[in-house]
Length: 279
Image (cartoon, rainbow, N blue to C red):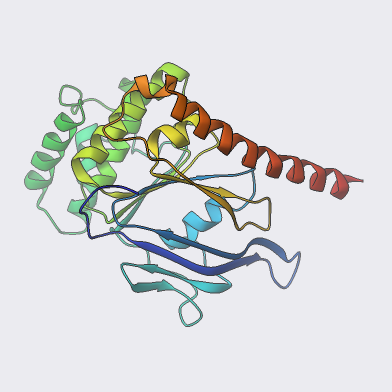
């Protein structure tokens, strides 16, 4: 758990179940899943493909309804039996695997867009704040450029800045670095850790990369194959701030091996289930 004194962004997932197409195919994606995430924690979510990781994120963000159970944010109900779908809000900002910047707007205009549309800031105020935050993220010299004129890593950093300008309680990341090469990914990890050290925003991060999960996280929640629930929680007690020297430490390698063993068990189950379905 983070040593942060942040008092915002505690997530409580209680006995959550999600069934897709209950009147048709009736696919249970998540079954009686519970998870507590402390305010200011970096919680990494790993598990087999299609196990329900993104279903949890969608429930928190308000993209999908839940079938049973409840999700709370700072003890306030987001969704539950009386409110199957959470309202979307700037307190929960999402960064997806595939970029979502407007290609016809500069990086600064993209970052400023949210506060302007919401009427929180006037255009000049929003652009000034965007410029300041881009500079903090090492993008001060490219704020005038369009997404197609910068590297994928720069564009992804700008997306995270665009989410953070709204001062969210929670940052929801769905495999944001999956398509990146190892060098770019390492730069992005450092950039995200710098953001976290500065803001202490609660982070809910889905990934298939076990080293990424251990390096970034305070805890790693390993999910079972579908229907998903929490199989195991791995506590990452490696001190912050972290550097890439961490990757070669004995403690890091032990945590990766522990996580890999649990994930591998579920991957085998997912494969065998798929084979049975095809048979």
